[in-house]
Length: 260
Image (cartoon, rainbow, N blue to C red; front, side):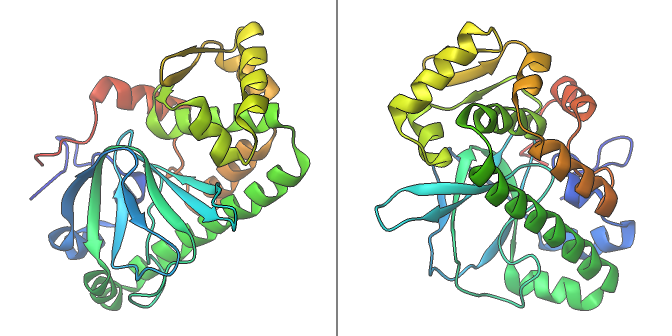
């Protein structure tokens, strides 16, 4: 199985694309192609994490903290810039948060025993994933601050822009009820925010989808959290966090070819 383009680049996941050639040669035979629809549960709190997943193209995974009343609040959104599941831990450990496919599609998957073997064979591979863990932690830190300090309008705009960055698309398959749950707010409250954003002309909605109509206008309404996370990614793992330009290039090239 070889997923290199004619230019020699990996297609689909920026973190894998950042691997050195010799590290890719180690890990590539251990990866398997995997696909899942929206809503697929990867693990719940307490489950033994058995695989690491690398979203490809427009696929998205959410980390969610499940509260006592059953609500599941999103703490991190992972797309083609990263991975979830035992990237830096030593083997299989119980999960703290829920991991759920937010936008279905193609993924690379690796058994954690194989991942540990690969990291044991390459110190640079271990360093890359450790650096990514630092970036993921920065996203979680920023999310905590955002939830405490920013308005629902700002957080809604931030989430939609983050989804656009990761998918390269200007709309996402998402109901208002799903978004309200992830943001930890009431459905009726979010409906008022969505209607206000529509009135301002920055988003548009149709059944089961929310689209960006005016990206500059939406950015003006969002908080500073996405740019802060993006800057940290660039400092630690330059080129991994998706840019607007890479999103446009992805849309022209098409998604990760599931057939390899």
